[in-house]
Image 1 (spheres, rainbow, N blue to C red):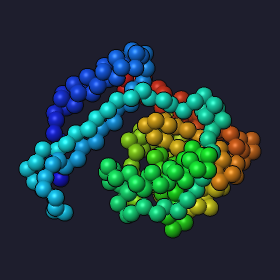
Image 2 (image 1 turned 90 degrees about the vertical axis):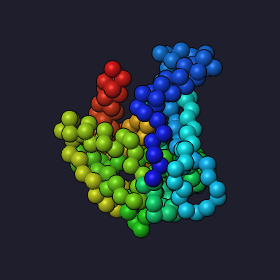
Image 3 (image 1 turned 180 degrees about the vertical axis):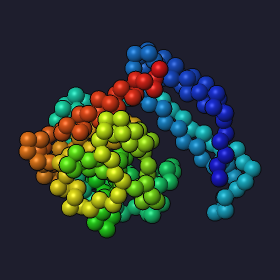
Image 4 (image 1 turned 30 degrees about the vertical axis):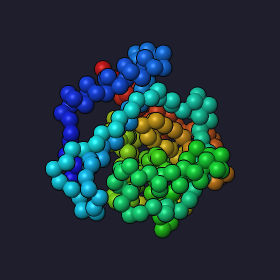
Length: 235
Protein backbone atom coordinates (compact mmCIF):
# COMPACT_ATOMS: atom_id res chain seq x y z
CA UNK A 1 0.00 0.00 0.00
CA UNK A 2 2.98 2.31 -0.37
CA UNK A 3 2.87 4.14 -3.67
CA UNK A 4 5.96 4.53 -5.79
CA UNK A 5 7.12 8.09 -5.05
CA UNK A 6 9.29 8.52 -8.15
CA UNK A 7 9.23 7.78 -11.85
CA UNK A 8 11.82 5.45 -13.35
CA UNK A 9 13.84 8.39 -14.66
CA UNK A 10 13.75 10.10 -11.25
CA UNK A 11 15.06 6.95 -9.56
CA UNK A 12 17.87 6.75 -12.12
CA UNK A 13 18.73 10.42 -11.70
CA UNK A 14 18.83 10.14 -7.91
CA UNK A 15 20.99 7.01 -8.00
CA UNK A 16 23.40 8.52 -10.51
CA UNK A 17 23.77 11.64 -8.37
CA UNK A 18 24.49 9.56 -5.25
CA UNK A 19 27.11 7.49 -7.08
CA UNK A 20 28.93 10.66 -8.16
CA UNK A 21 28.77 12.10 -4.63
CA UNK A 22 30.09 8.87 -3.16
CA UNK A 23 32.95 8.80 -5.66
CA UNK A 24 33.82 12.38 -4.82
CA UNK A 25 33.87 11.73 -1.07
CA UNK A 26 35.85 8.48 -1.33
CA UNK A 27 38.33 9.69 -3.92
CA UNK A 28 37.65 6.60 -6.05
CA UNK A 29 36.25 7.27 -9.52
CA UNK A 30 32.78 5.86 -10.10
CA UNK A 31 34.02 4.13 -13.25
CA UNK A 32 36.83 2.39 -11.36
CA UNK A 33 34.86 0.68 -8.60
CA UNK A 34 31.63 -1.21 -7.98
CA UNK A 35 28.99 0.65 -6.01
CA UNK A 36 26.21 -0.64 -3.77
CA UNK A 37 22.96 1.34 -3.73
CA UNK A 38 20.73 0.82 -0.69
CA UNK A 39 17.19 2.23 -0.75
CA UNK A 40 14.48 2.19 1.91
CA UNK A 41 10.96 3.48 1.30
CA UNK A 42 8.63 3.87 4.27
CA UNK A 43 5.01 4.89 4.36
CA UNK A 44 5.63 8.49 5.41
CA UNK A 45 4.92 10.90 8.25
CA UNK A 46 1.51 10.71 9.93
CA UNK A 47 -0.13 10.83 13.34
CA UNK A 48 0.73 7.79 15.44
CA UNK A 49 -1.81 5.06 14.82
CA UNK A 50 -1.74 1.36 13.96
CA UNK A 51 -4.05 1.94 11.00
CA UNK A 52 -2.24 2.50 7.72
CA UNK A 53 -2.62 6.17 6.75
CA UNK A 54 -3.63 7.20 3.23
CA UNK A 55 -2.70 10.12 1.00
CA UNK A 56 0.69 10.76 2.56
CA UNK A 57 4.07 11.20 0.92
CA UNK A 58 6.42 8.21 1.31
CA UNK A 59 9.77 8.79 2.98
CA UNK A 60 12.79 7.78 0.88
CA UNK A 61 16.22 6.98 2.29
CA UNK A 62 19.00 6.13 -0.15
CA UNK A 63 22.74 5.68 0.16
CA UNK A 64 25.62 4.50 -1.99
CA UNK A 65 28.78 2.83 -0.72
CA UNK A 66 31.72 0.97 -2.18
CA UNK A 67 30.81 -2.65 -2.86
CA UNK A 68 33.21 -5.01 -1.14
CA UNK A 69 32.77 -8.44 -2.70
CA UNK A 70 34.08 -11.63 -1.07
CA UNK A 71 37.86 -11.90 -1.00
CA UNK A 72 39.84 -14.13 -3.31
CA UNK A 73 40.49 -16.43 -0.34
CA UNK A 74 36.76 -16.77 0.26
CA UNK A 75 36.23 -17.47 -3.43
CA UNK A 76 38.84 -20.20 -3.59
CA UNK A 77 38.44 -21.70 -0.10
CA UNK A 78 34.75 -21.13 0.57
CA UNK A 79 33.33 -19.92 3.87
CA UNK A 80 32.31 -21.38 7.21
CA UNK A 81 28.69 -21.15 8.37
CA UNK A 82 26.74 -22.25 11.41
CA UNK A 83 23.14 -23.40 11.70
CA UNK A 84 20.34 -22.17 13.94
CA UNK A 85 16.60 -22.47 14.37
CA UNK A 86 14.61 -19.92 12.39
CA UNK A 87 13.01 -17.94 15.21
CA UNK A 88 11.64 -15.10 13.04
CA UNK A 89 7.98 -14.26 12.50
CA UNK A 90 6.00 -15.87 9.67
CA UNK A 91 6.19 -12.88 7.32
CA UNK A 92 9.85 -13.26 6.38
CA UNK A 93 9.00 -12.50 2.74
CA UNK A 94 8.35 -8.85 3.65
CA UNK A 95 11.49 -6.74 3.33
CA UNK A 96 10.94 -4.09 5.98
CA UNK A 97 13.17 -1.69 7.88
CA UNK A 98 12.80 -3.94 10.94
CA UNK A 99 15.92 -6.05 10.47
CA UNK A 100 15.96 -7.42 14.01
CA UNK A 101 15.51 -11.05 12.93
CA UNK A 102 18.39 -10.79 10.46
CA UNK A 103 20.54 -8.97 13.01
CA UNK A 104 20.02 -11.67 15.67
CA UNK A 105 20.73 -14.42 13.14
CA UNK A 106 23.87 -12.73 11.82
CA UNK A 107 25.14 -12.15 15.35
CA UNK A 108 25.04 -15.91 15.95
CA UNK A 109 27.48 -16.52 13.09
CA UNK A 110 29.62 -13.50 13.97
CA UNK A 111 30.04 -14.72 17.54
CA UNK A 112 31.04 -18.14 16.16
CA UNK A 113 33.60 -16.63 13.77
CA UNK A 114 31.52 -17.70 10.77
CA UNK A 115 30.28 -15.89 7.67
CA UNK A 116 26.57 -16.72 7.78
CA UNK A 117 23.85 -18.43 9.79
CA UNK A 118 21.90 -21.11 7.91
CA UNK A 119 18.42 -21.31 9.42
CA UNK A 120 16.00 -24.21 9.74
CA UNK A 121 12.30 -24.11 10.62
CA UNK A 122 10.73 -27.33 11.90
CA UNK A 123 13.63 -29.34 10.48
CA UNK A 124 13.55 -27.77 7.02
CA UNK A 125 15.86 -25.23 5.39
CA UNK A 126 14.65 -21.64 5.18
CA UNK A 127 17.51 -19.22 4.41
CA UNK A 128 20.53 -17.47 5.89
CA UNK A 129 20.58 -14.19 7.80
CA UNK A 130 21.20 -12.08 4.70
CA UNK A 131 21.52 -14.64 1.89
CA UNK A 132 19.60 -17.36 0.13
CA UNK A 133 20.93 -20.91 0.50
CA UNK A 134 21.27 -23.46 -2.31
CA UNK A 135 21.86 -27.20 -2.10
CA UNK A 136 23.64 -29.24 -4.79
CA UNK A 137 23.05 -32.99 -4.95
CA UNK A 138 23.97 -35.25 -7.88
CA UNK A 139 24.46 -32.23 -10.12
CA UNK A 140 21.06 -30.68 -9.36
CA UNK A 141 20.71 -27.24 -7.76
CA UNK A 142 17.89 -27.05 -5.23
CA UNK A 143 16.41 -24.14 -3.33
CA UNK A 144 13.39 -23.61 -1.12
CA UNK A 145 10.06 -22.29 -2.48
CA UNK A 146 9.59 -18.54 -2.21
CA UNK A 147 6.73 -18.45 0.27
CA UNK A 148 6.06 -16.31 3.33
CA UNK A 149 8.93 -17.93 5.25
CA UNK A 150 11.67 -16.77 2.89
CA UNK A 151 12.75 -13.37 1.61
CA UNK A 152 13.19 -13.91 -2.12
CA UNK A 153 16.59 -12.45 -2.95
CA UNK A 154 16.91 -10.39 -6.10
CA UNK A 155 19.24 -13.09 -7.43
CA UNK A 156 16.69 -15.91 -7.12
CA UNK A 157 15.38 -15.60 -10.67
CA UNK A 158 18.86 -14.99 -12.07
CA UNK A 159 20.18 -18.22 -10.52
CA UNK A 160 17.34 -20.15 -12.14
CA UNK A 161 18.02 -18.50 -15.52
CA UNK A 162 21.72 -19.35 -15.28
CA UNK A 163 20.94 -22.98 -14.47
CA UNK A 164 18.68 -23.17 -17.51
CA UNK A 165 21.41 -21.71 -19.75
CA UNK A 166 24.05 -24.08 -18.37
CA UNK A 167 21.82 -27.14 -18.44
CA UNK A 168 22.02 -27.58 -14.67
CA UNK A 169 18.87 -29.28 -13.28
CA UNK A 170 16.99 -26.87 -11.01
CA UNK A 171 14.27 -27.50 -8.44
CA UNK A 172 12.48 -25.54 -5.73
CA UNK A 173 11.09 -27.69 -2.89
CA UNK A 174 11.25 -28.21 0.84
CA UNK A 175 14.72 -29.40 1.85
CA UNK A 176 15.30 -31.26 5.10
CA UNK A 177 18.14 -30.59 7.51
CA UNK A 178 19.50 -34.06 6.76
CA UNK A 179 19.67 -33.27 3.04
CA UNK A 180 21.54 -30.05 3.73
CA UNK A 181 24.20 -31.83 5.77
CA UNK A 182 24.50 -34.57 3.13
CA UNK A 183 24.79 -32.15 0.20
CA UNK A 184 27.52 -32.36 -2.41
CA UNK A 185 27.77 -28.56 -2.34
CA UNK A 186 26.17 -25.72 -0.41
CA UNK A 187 26.01 -22.20 -1.81
CA UNK A 188 25.04 -18.72 -0.68
CA UNK A 189 23.67 -16.08 -3.03
CA UNK A 190 23.03 -12.38 -2.47
CA UNK A 191 23.79 -9.04 -4.08
CA UNK A 192 27.03 -8.70 -2.12
CA UNK A 193 28.12 -12.35 -1.88
CA UNK A 194 27.09 -13.12 -5.48
CA UNK A 195 27.61 -16.92 -5.57
CA UNK A 196 29.74 -18.21 -2.71
CA UNK A 197 30.49 -21.75 -1.53
CA UNK A 198 29.83 -22.91 2.02
CA UNK A 199 32.63 -25.37 2.75
CA UNK A 200 32.01 -26.02 6.44
CA UNK A 201 28.71 -26.03 8.34
CA UNK A 202 28.77 -26.36 12.12
CA UNK A 203 32.40 -27.41 11.83
CA UNK A 204 31.57 -30.26 9.45
CA UNK A 205 33.15 -30.20 6.00
CA UNK A 206 30.57 -29.95 3.24
CA UNK A 207 30.40 -32.45 0.41
CA UNK A 208 32.05 -35.70 -0.53
CA UNK A 209 35.45 -36.61 -2.05
CA UNK A 210 37.11 -35.27 -4.14
CA UNK A 211 35.55 -31.85 -3.36
CA UNK A 212 34.79 -32.32 0.31
CA UNK A 213 35.46 -29.10 2.18
CA UNK A 214 36.22 -27.27 -1.08
CA UNK A 215 34.15 -25.23 -3.54
CA UNK A 216 32.66 -27.67 -6.04
CA UNK A 217 32.18 -27.69 -9.82
CA UNK A 218 28.58 -26.41 -9.80
CA UNK A 219 29.62 -23.40 -7.73
CA UNK A 220 32.44 -22.66 -10.18
CA UNK A 221 30.11 -22.79 -13.18
CA UNK A 222 27.44 -20.66 -11.53
CA UNK A 223 29.97 -18.07 -10.38
CA UNK A 224 31.51 -17.72 -13.85
CA UNK A 225 28.09 -17.42 -15.50
CA UNK A 226 27.01 -14.93 -12.84
CA UNK A 227 29.96 -12.69 -13.69
CA UNK A 228 29.06 -12.88 -17.39
CA UNK A 229 25.45 -11.94 -16.62
CA UNK A 230 26.58 -9.06 -14.43
CA UNK A 231 28.80 -7.63 -17.16
CA UNK A 232 26.07 -8.08 -19.77
CA UNK A 233 23.54 -6.20 -17.63
CA UNK A 234 26.01 -3.33 -17.22
CA UNK A 235 25.99 -2.84 -20.98
